[in-house]
Image: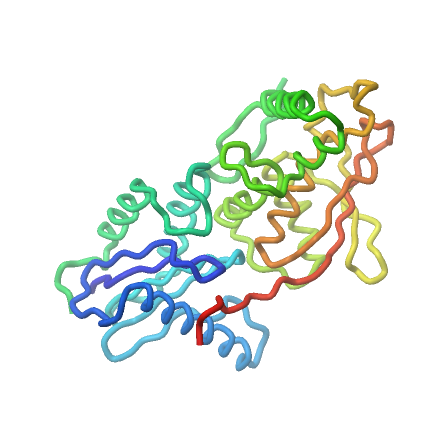
Length: 145
Length: 188
């Protein structure tokens, strides 16, 4: 099992943070384009899912998977979106994504008055804490699939 | 004899007197910096952005993230639920009080928060030359900023204030509209 990469978006589609671990193949387009595509896809999938839902939606869309990877999605009522791509062996990881939001993003970015909101996070502390948290996850391992 | 603010599970406690006095110092400084009370009221509710002195609105914009991270409250379905969460969860968490919710408008888009005792004014008496100062106006800015981040445009204002001789403190909240998410410009 392994973690490929992680995106953090705000409500306006700004990519606040991106990091990757075991990603062997790149998308072949500039990173900015990739963020836009990713956000656009999430935006559409969200509205599609809520339109199709036979009952009132609660948490909305949680994850999707292809034959090679699984995309996990977590969104707060303020529109912060945490997206993590892993391989197929990883189960539901809502608590992990919630932890990234509540214990890392809120604690280290939102509560830091020197970090302006709504633009790429510059905080080195945030980056390194996030990196070590992801590396410490039980499903993080070097045997990339 | 200090009231302790209950700050959730990982509770960090601080003396509410220290908090009250700190807030007092902020208001006093603003009264020195600005010529008339109207400007101070505006500053407390502040719209302009300032990194180092984020007040009301700017506090709300950040505080809502902390609130969501800590409280595990999901999205509210209507304004009544929002009112309940504000009074019973948010005020309790940050100020240690639970205001009561009354005076719903027939359309359900306006209500009042009644604060029996407002911890911000524990040691405050308004001097005569500041009769139009809305001392706790910061709270309105916080409410407005926080709700805007969860896609609700609201108006918040003080209609009664114990500092002005009223029996209770009353904040009137009015729902304006739901802010829709839009796809950022320049995307297909």
